[in-house]
Amino acid sequence: MQLASNRVLFVTARVLEIIVAAIFLAAVILKALDPVSFAEQIAEYGIFPDLASLAAWTLIIIESLLAAALIVNFLPRIVPLLTIALLLFFIGITAYGMSIGLGENCGCFGNLVHRGPEQVIIEDTIMIIALVFSVVVLWHHRLERRGVRMATVIGTGAAVAALTAFSPYVPADDYITQLHPGASFTTWPVDGLYGKNLTTGRHLVFLFTVDAEDIGSQVEQMNTLAQAAGDVSTVGLIIDGTEHLTSLMFEYAAAFPIGAVEPRFARPLYRTLPRVFILDNGTVTHTWSELPRKSDVVEAITSLPQHQDTP
Image (cartoon, rainbow, N blue to C red; front, side, top):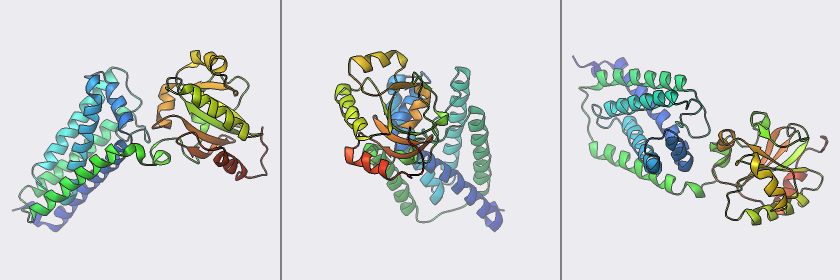
């Protein structure tokens, strides 16, 4: 007797496959929109770090193909088994990461979602169990219109590849990073800002790196924006460590106080640098993924509620 002939078992198996596929697709989209960060997370494992970018692209495409195939039920004997093999690989890599002290972020969902390794292993194990059930139920299920299903899978892979390639031009920073309107700054530790409390009052904040090729020009533009901010406090945050703070103040003549955010806390806040944002009593109200125009800064500050005091 074919288990797939039982309507309840068949529907349950297909629903489980689609749920797993949806999880894969969500992870794929988040990683495709920030492939550089995903490659950096892969490189942290120290396994052929020079191939991290290639590995990132390869995993993104493979996951998208498997997700699409699960959704349309293409190759029901092969695809679930390949997905199980990939999940076992992820569990092995996660366990290896734990052994070398990489326990903060698996990179599964880019920089938006952070999960501990134990949670990752449990979730991957649950997906494996769901797929094993689906394989058993659907093993003898025959399909028609394989050509349409194959075209859907290939089309999905091509679309994800295009999204990955053009991701720098997609304005998605507020959706795939932890720096977005409504976010709280209290979870981002800052060093070197003596006498400045970013959780109270209003602040125009520049997040940048001293390694930028045009760092001098950037600081000059930041000084101009600081003047445009008027009574709103202006602060710079670098991702490079406190040892660079003095050079920024004297060599580049930064006209605003500068602190440093540890790279492991700063990396989830951006895809590219500089990023600029406004804090109102510790809450992000506006963000920019590049240095904004003076008029944009003035307009954003003017739009803030007037009943709160500025520092």
